[in-house]
Length: 97
Image (cartoon, rainbow, N blue to C red):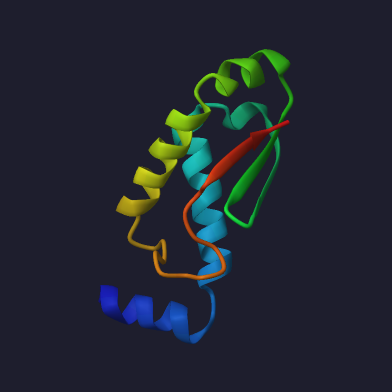
């Protein structure tokens, strides 16, 4: 069944959009800042996050590298995340605004 779903995602070219949504879910699950997140944007390996609280943003700035690692581990365990997608892959950089 997993192979069938993966083949369907590749055939319908849904991988980039699905990967982006999985990245946003990884942010919500790993950061704990989902209630304070105003905007999310992913492009070129960079995840841009706009937060409503400067206090939360400053706390997360100290944890940026650990958050990127934690989110990538979360994505590696996600069965719907397409790991070999050239357009949307793992998170390389986190930019907090």
